[in-house]
Amino acid sequence: MESQSNEQEISLLDLFAVLLRFKYLIFSITGIAILFVVLYSIFSLLLPSEKSYLPNYYTPKAIMLINNSSSSGGSLSSMLSSSGLSSLASLAGVSASGGATYSALAVYITQTDSFLDSVNDKFDFSNRYKITTNKKSTIRTILKKLIKAEFDAETGILSVEFSDTDPAFAQSVVNYCVFLIETRFKELGIDKNQLARENLELNLTNSFNEIKRLENDNQKLGNSINLGRGLAGGESYALEATRIKLELEAQKAVYTQLKTQYELVKVKMASESPIFQILENAEIPEQKAGPSRGKLCIIVTFVAFFFSICLAFILNAISAIKKDPTAMAKLHGAKK
Image (cartoon, rainbow, N blue to C red; front, side):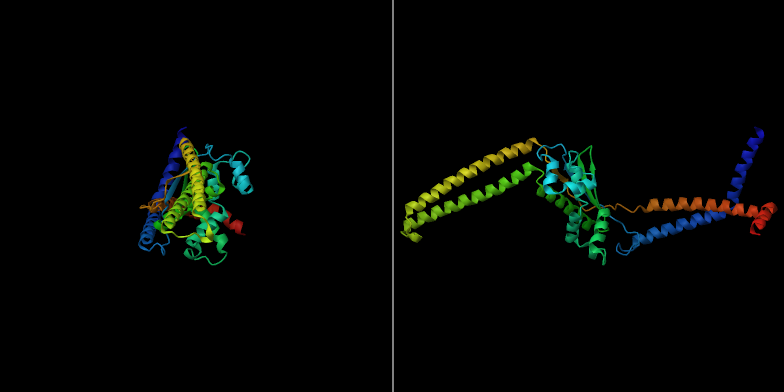
Protein backbone atom coordinates (compact mmCIF):
# COMPACT_ATOMS: atom_id res chain seq x y z
CA MET A 1 0.00 0.00 0.00
CA GLU A 2 2.83 2.37 0.86
CA SER A 3 4.61 1.70 -2.44
CA GLN A 4 1.38 2.33 -4.38
CA SER A 5 0.94 5.64 -2.56
CA ASN A 6 4.52 6.61 -3.37
CA GLU A 7 3.98 5.77 -7.05
CA GLN A 8 0.87 7.96 -7.17
CA GLU A 9 2.72 10.79 -5.46
CA ILE A 10 5.61 10.49 -7.86
CA SER A 11 3.19 10.41 -10.79
CA LEU A 12 1.45 13.59 -9.66
CA LEU A 13 4.79 15.26 -9.05
CA ASP A 14 5.90 14.27 -12.55
CA LEU A 15 2.79 15.82 -14.05
CA PHE A 16 3.25 18.99 -12.05
CA ALA A 17 6.90 19.08 -13.04
CA VAL A 18 5.98 18.89 -16.72
CA LEU A 19 3.59 21.83 -16.30
CA LEU A 20 6.28 23.85 -14.54
CA ARG A 21 8.82 22.99 -17.21
CA PHE A 22 6.53 24.24 -20.00
CA LYS A 23 4.88 27.04 -18.03
CA TYR A 24 6.09 29.72 -20.42
CA LEU A 25 4.71 27.80 -23.37
CA ILE A 26 1.34 27.40 -21.63
CA PHE A 27 1.17 31.05 -20.59
CA SER A 28 2.31 32.25 -24.01
CA ILE A 29 -0.24 30.25 -26.00
CA THR A 30 -3.07 31.17 -23.61
CA GLY A 31 -2.04 34.84 -23.55
CA ILE A 32 -1.80 35.05 -27.34
CA ALA A 33 -5.23 33.42 -27.66
CA ILE A 34 -6.74 35.89 -25.16
CA LEU A 35 -5.20 38.85 -26.95
CA PHE A 36 -6.37 37.61 -30.33
CA VAL A 37 -9.98 36.93 -29.31
CA VAL A 38 -10.27 40.26 -27.44
CA LEU A 39 -8.97 42.23 -30.43
CA TYR A 40 -11.19 40.14 -32.72
CA SER A 41 -14.25 41.07 -30.63
CA ILE A 42 -13.31 44.76 -30.37
CA PHE A 43 -12.74 45.21 -34.11
CA SER A 44 -16.04 43.42 -34.87
CA LEU A 45 -17.78 46.11 -32.81
CA LEU A 46 -15.93 49.01 -34.44
CA LEU A 47 -16.80 47.97 -37.99
CA PRO A 48 -20.24 48.83 -39.48
CA SER A 49 -22.73 45.99 -39.27
CA GLU A 50 -22.74 45.43 -43.05
CA LYS A 51 -18.94 45.03 -43.07
CA SER A 52 -18.37 43.38 -39.70
CA TYR A 53 -17.33 39.71 -39.67
CA LEU A 54 -19.15 39.29 -36.34
CA PRO A 55 -22.07 41.77 -36.43
CA ASN A 56 -24.66 42.22 -33.71
CA TYR A 57 -28.03 40.70 -34.59
CA TYR A 58 -31.43 41.46 -33.14
CA THR A 59 -34.39 39.13 -32.67
CA PRO A 60 -37.80 40.78 -32.11
CA LYS A 61 -40.66 38.55 -31.06
CA ALA A 62 -44.43 38.60 -31.61
CA ILE A 63 -46.76 36.65 -29.31
CA MET A 64 -50.08 35.08 -30.29
CA LEU A 65 -52.61 32.97 -28.44
CA ILE A 66 -53.69 29.75 -30.18
CA ASN A 67 -56.72 28.07 -28.64
CA ASN A 68 -56.57 24.40 -29.66
CA SER A 69 -59.63 23.51 -27.57
CA SER A 70 -61.94 26.13 -29.09
CA SER A 71 -65.18 24.83 -30.57
CA SER A 72 -65.82 27.90 -32.69
CA GLY A 73 -63.62 26.62 -35.47
CA GLY A 74 -65.32 23.29 -35.88
CA SER A 75 -63.25 20.32 -37.01
CA LEU A 76 -59.75 21.17 -38.12
CA SER A 77 -59.60 17.91 -40.05
CA SER A 78 -62.47 18.98 -42.27
CA MET A 79 -60.91 22.43 -42.69
CA LEU A 80 -57.64 20.93 -43.87
CA SER A 81 -59.39 18.54 -46.22
CA SER A 82 -61.54 21.23 -47.79
CA SER A 83 -58.58 23.59 -48.19
CA GLY A 84 -56.31 20.98 -49.75
CA LEU A 85 -53.75 21.24 -46.95
CA SER A 86 -54.28 17.79 -45.44
CA SER A 87 -51.73 15.97 -47.59
CA LEU A 88 -49.15 18.73 -47.21
CA ALA A 89 -49.69 19.20 -43.48
CA SER A 90 -49.04 15.50 -42.82
CA LEU A 91 -45.46 16.04 -44.00
CA ALA A 92 -44.90 18.44 -41.11
CA GLY A 93 -46.49 16.16 -38.51
CA VAL A 94 -49.91 17.80 -38.71
CA SER A 95 -52.34 14.92 -39.05
CA ALA A 96 -55.71 15.71 -40.53
CA SER A 97 -57.25 12.49 -39.17
CA GLY A 98 -58.10 13.84 -35.73
CA GLY A 99 -54.74 14.66 -34.17
CA ALA A 100 -54.42 18.00 -35.90
CA THR A 101 -54.15 21.15 -33.83
CA TYR A 102 -54.43 24.80 -34.76
CA SER A 103 -51.03 25.50 -33.19
CA ALA A 104 -49.33 22.83 -35.31
CA LEU A 105 -51.03 24.27 -38.38
CA ALA A 106 -49.82 27.79 -37.51
CA VAL A 107 -46.22 26.59 -37.09
CA TYR A 108 -46.46 24.61 -40.33
CA ILE A 109 -47.78 27.61 -42.27
CA THR A 110 -44.60 29.57 -41.47
CA GLN A 111 -42.53 26.92 -43.29
CA THR A 112 -44.64 26.65 -46.44
CA ASP A 113 -43.23 27.85 -49.75
CA SER A 114 -46.16 30.19 -50.38
CA PHE A 115 -45.63 31.86 -46.99
CA LEU A 116 -41.88 32.28 -47.53
CA ASP A 117 -42.43 33.58 -51.06
CA SER A 118 -44.89 36.18 -49.75
CA VAL A 119 -42.34 37.39 -47.19
CA ASN A 120 -39.69 37.61 -49.90
CA ASP A 121 -42.03 39.50 -52.24
CA LYS A 122 -42.62 42.04 -49.48
CA PHE A 123 -38.99 42.60 -48.43
CA ASP A 124 -36.92 41.53 -51.49
CA PHE A 125 -34.32 39.38 -49.71
CA SER A 126 -32.55 38.57 -52.98
CA ASN A 127 -31.24 42.15 -53.16
CA ARG A 128 -30.68 42.41 -49.41
CA TYR A 129 -28.54 39.26 -49.30
CA LYS A 130 -27.08 39.73 -52.80
CA ILE A 131 -28.42 36.42 -54.11
CA THR A 132 -27.99 36.02 -57.86
CA THR A 133 -28.43 32.29 -58.58
CA ASN A 134 -31.33 29.99 -57.66
CA LYS A 135 -32.99 32.92 -55.95
CA LYS A 136 -36.29 31.34 -54.98
CA SER A 137 -34.92 28.10 -53.49
CA THR A 138 -31.98 29.84 -51.80
CA ILE A 139 -34.17 32.46 -50.16
CA ARG A 140 -36.60 29.81 -48.96
CA THR A 141 -33.75 27.93 -47.31
CA ILE A 142 -32.44 31.10 -45.64
CA LEU A 143 -35.86 32.20 -44.38
CA LYS A 144 -36.62 28.76 -42.95
CA LYS A 145 -33.58 29.21 -40.71
CA LEU A 146 -34.22 32.86 -39.82
CA ILE A 147 -37.99 32.70 -39.18
CA LYS A 148 -38.68 30.70 -36.05
CA ALA A 149 -42.18 29.80 -34.87
CA GLU A 150 -42.51 27.96 -31.57
CA PHE A 151 -45.59 26.90 -29.63
CA ASP A 152 -45.76 26.45 -25.85
CA ALA A 153 -48.41 23.85 -25.11
CA GLU A 154 -48.64 24.82 -21.41
CA THR A 155 -49.54 28.46 -22.06
CA GLY A 156 -51.03 28.15 -25.55
CA ILE A 157 -48.62 30.85 -26.75
CA LEU A 158 -47.22 30.89 -30.28
CA SER A 159 -44.12 33.06 -30.70
CA VAL A 160 -42.66 34.18 -34.02
CA GLU A 161 -39.09 35.50 -34.27
CA PHE A 162 -36.77 36.75 -36.97
CA SER A 163 -33.07 37.65 -36.66
CA ASP A 164 -31.28 40.41 -38.54
CA THR A 165 -28.57 43.01 -38.04
CA ASP A 166 -31.16 45.78 -38.56
CA PRO A 167 -33.61 45.80 -35.59
CA ALA A 168 -36.25 47.89 -37.39
CA PHE A 169 -36.16 45.61 -40.43
CA ALA A 170 -36.42 42.52 -38.24
CA GLN A 171 -39.47 44.00 -36.49
CA SER A 172 -41.18 44.66 -39.83
CA VAL A 173 -40.58 41.08 -40.97
CA VAL A 174 -41.99 39.58 -37.76
CA ASN A 175 -45.14 41.71 -37.83
CA TYR A 176 -45.69 40.89 -41.49
CA CYS A 177 -45.34 37.18 -40.69
CA VAL A 178 -48.03 37.56 -38.01
CA PHE A 179 -50.25 39.32 -40.54
CA LEU A 180 -49.77 36.46 -43.03
CA ILE A 181 -50.61 33.80 -40.43
CA GLU A 182 -53.76 35.67 -39.42
CA THR A 183 -54.74 36.12 -43.07
CA ARG A 184 -54.18 32.44 -43.80
CA PHE A 185 -56.37 31.44 -40.84
CA LYS A 186 -59.12 33.72 -42.17
CA GLU A 187 -58.80 32.30 -45.68
CA LEU A 188 -59.21 28.78 -44.33
CA GLY A 189 -62.32 29.88 -42.44
CA ILE A 190 -61.08 28.25 -39.25
CA ASP A 191 -62.69 30.67 -36.78
CA LYS A 192 -66.30 30.52 -37.93
CA ASN A 193 -67.53 33.04 -35.37
CA GLN A 194 -64.98 35.61 -36.49
CA LEU A 195 -65.81 34.93 -40.13
CA ALA A 196 -69.55 35.25 -39.45
CA ARG A 197 -68.99 38.52 -37.58
CA GLU A 198 -66.99 40.03 -40.45
CA ASN A 199 -69.61 38.96 -43.01
CA LEU A 200 -72.41 40.40 -40.90
CA GLU A 201 -70.53 43.68 -40.46
CA LEU A 202 -70.13 43.94 -44.24
CA ASN A 203 -73.79 43.12 -44.86
CA LEU A 204 -74.91 45.58 -42.19
CA THR A 205 -72.88 48.34 -43.82
CA ASN A 206 -74.32 47.54 -47.26
CA SER A 207 -77.87 47.38 -45.90
CA PHE A 208 -77.48 50.67 -44.05
CA ASN A 209 -76.12 52.36 -47.18
CA GLU A 210 -79.07 51.02 -49.17
CA ILE A 211 -81.49 52.44 -46.58
CA LYS A 212 -79.80 55.85 -46.83
CA ARG A 213 -80.01 55.69 -50.64
CA LEU A 214 -83.73 54.90 -50.57
CA GLU A 215 -84.42 57.66 -48.06
CA ASN A 216 -82.53 60.10 -50.31
CA ASP A 217 -84.59 58.92 -53.29
CA ASN A 218 -87.75 59.42 -51.27
CA GLN A 219 -86.64 62.92 -50.31
CA LYS A 220 -85.81 63.78 -53.92
CA LEU A 221 -89.23 62.50 -54.98
CA GLY A 222 -90.90 64.76 -52.43
CA ASN A 223 -88.90 67.74 -53.69
CA SER A 224 -89.90 66.94 -57.27
CA ILE A 225 -93.56 66.88 -56.27
CA ASN A 226 -93.24 70.25 -54.56
CA LEU A 227 -91.55 71.74 -57.65
CA GLY A 228 -94.10 70.19 -60.00
CA ARG A 229 -91.58 68.21 -62.02
CA GLY A 230 -92.56 65.06 -63.89
CA LEU A 231 -90.96 61.63 -63.72
CA ALA A 232 -89.00 60.05 -66.57
CA GLY A 233 -91.04 57.54 -68.58
CA GLY A 234 -94.31 59.02 -67.46
CA GLU A 235 -94.41 57.12 -64.18
CA SER A 236 -96.79 58.44 -61.57
CA TYR A 237 -95.58 59.89 -58.29
CA ALA A 238 -97.84 57.48 -56.41
CA LEU A 239 -96.28 54.35 -57.98
CA GLU A 240 -92.74 55.58 -57.43
CA ALA A 241 -93.50 56.56 -53.84
CA THR A 242 -95.05 53.13 -53.23
CA ARG A 243 -92.00 51.35 -54.71
CA ILE A 244 -89.56 53.32 -52.60
CA LYS A 245 -91.68 52.77 -49.48
CA LEU A 246 -91.86 48.99 -50.02
CA GLU A 247 -88.11 48.71 -50.71
CA LEU A 248 -87.34 50.86 -47.69
CA GLU A 249 -89.50 48.70 -45.41
CA ALA A 250 -87.95 45.53 -46.79
CA GLN A 251 -84.43 46.88 -46.37
CA LYS A 252 -85.17 47.97 -42.80
CA ALA A 253 -86.48 44.47 -42.04
CA VAL A 254 -83.28 42.96 -43.49
CA TYR A 255 -81.18 45.36 -41.44
CA THR A 256 -83.08 44.41 -38.27
CA GLN A 257 -82.50 40.69 -38.90
CA LEU A 258 -78.81 41.22 -39.64
CA LYS A 259 -78.40 43.34 -36.50
CA THR A 260 -80.05 40.62 -34.41
CA GLN A 261 -77.73 37.96 -35.85
CA TYR A 262 -74.75 40.23 -35.30
CA GLU A 263 -75.54 40.74 -31.63
CA LEU A 264 -76.03 36.97 -31.17
CA VAL A 265 -72.64 36.27 -32.73
CA LYS A 266 -71.03 38.86 -30.45
CA VAL A 267 -72.57 37.16 -27.41
CA LYS A 268 -71.32 33.78 -28.65
CA MET A 269 -67.83 35.11 -29.26
CA ALA A 270 -67.76 36.63 -25.78
CA SER A 271 -68.48 33.20 -24.29
CA GLU A 272 -65.77 31.45 -26.34
CA SER A 273 -62.06 32.07 -26.68
CA PRO A 274 -60.97 32.97 -30.22
CA ILE A 275 -58.77 30.46 -32.01
CA PHE A 276 -56.21 33.03 -33.10
CA GLN A 277 -55.51 36.17 -31.10
CA ILE A 278 -52.54 38.55 -31.34
CA LEU A 279 -51.33 39.41 -27.85
CA GLU A 280 -48.24 41.44 -28.70
CA ASN A 281 -46.83 42.64 -31.98
CA ALA A 282 -43.06 42.76 -32.32
CA GLU A 283 -41.27 45.87 -31.09
CA ILE A 284 -37.89 47.23 -32.19
CA PRO A 285 -35.43 45.50 -29.82
CA GLU A 286 -33.07 47.74 -27.89
CA GLN A 287 -30.63 44.98 -26.94
CA LYS A 288 -28.84 42.58 -29.24
CA ALA A 289 -29.66 38.88 -29.17
CA GLY A 290 -26.11 37.94 -30.06
CA PRO A 291 -23.36 37.15 -30.55
CA SER A 292 -22.04 36.76 -26.99
CA ARG A 293 -18.48 38.04 -27.31
CA GLY A 294 -17.79 37.48 -23.62
CA LYS A 295 -18.72 33.82 -23.93
CA LEU A 296 -16.58 33.57 -27.07
CA CYS A 297 -13.57 34.96 -25.15
CA ILE A 298 -14.08 32.48 -22.31
CA ILE A 299 -14.39 29.51 -24.67
CA VAL A 300 -11.29 30.46 -26.69
CA THR A 301 -9.30 31.00 -23.47
CA PHE A 302 -10.18 27.58 -22.08
CA VAL A 303 -9.55 25.85 -25.42
CA ALA A 304 -6.15 27.52 -25.76
CA PHE A 305 -5.25 26.69 -22.13
CA PHE A 306 -6.09 22.99 -22.46
CA PHE A 307 -4.45 22.82 -25.89
CA SER A 308 -1.23 24.26 -24.46
CA ILE A 309 -1.28 21.68 -21.64
CA CYS A 310 -1.76 18.84 -24.11
CA LEU A 311 1.04 20.25 -26.26
CA ALA A 312 3.30 20.40 -23.19
CA PHE A 313 2.75 16.73 -22.41
CA ILE A 314 3.30 15.80 -26.07
CA LEU A 315 6.57 17.71 -26.20
CA ASN A 316 7.66 16.17 -22.88
CA ALA A 317 6.87 12.69 -24.19
CA ILE A 318 8.88 13.33 -27.36
CA SER A 319 11.79 14.60 -25.27
CA ALA A 320 11.65 11.51 -23.03
CA ILE A 321 11.65 9.20 -26.04
CA LYS A 322 14.69 10.94 -27.50
CA LYS A 323 16.57 10.44 -24.20
CA ASP A 324 15.60 6.74 -23.98
CA PRO A 325 18.12 4.62 -25.95
CA THR A 326 15.82 1.61 -25.93
CA ALA A 327 12.94 3.59 -27.38
CA MET A 328 15.17 5.19 -29.99
CA ALA A 329 16.55 1.77 -30.97
CA LYS A 330 13.01 0.54 -31.47
CA LEU A 331 12.22 3.56 -33.63
CA HIS A 332 15.35 3.06 -35.74
CA GLY A 333 14.47 -0.62 -36.08
CA ALA A 334 10.97 0.23 -37.21
CA LYS A 335 12.36 2.60 -39.85
CA LYS A 336 14.64 -0.12 -41.22
